[in-house]
Length: 53
Image (cartoon, rainbow, N blue to C red; front, side):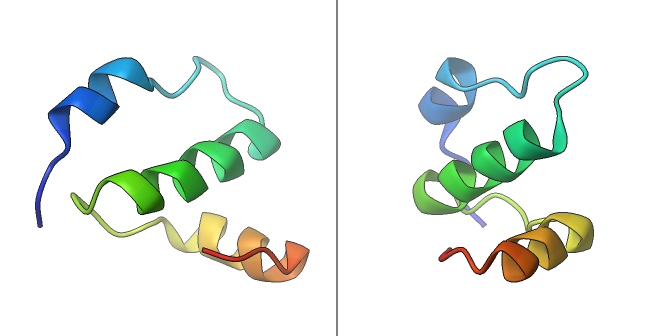
């Protein structure tokens, strides 16, 4: 998997991020970087909210 270093440096996960912030961050991360899989808890929340990855 390829790390997009520039994206990661510019888009840090907020400290003590809320679930909404985590979902938003992981959706953007999936669009810009392929360094790792999304956590199962976030995937489940995205499905629950019927969002597109």
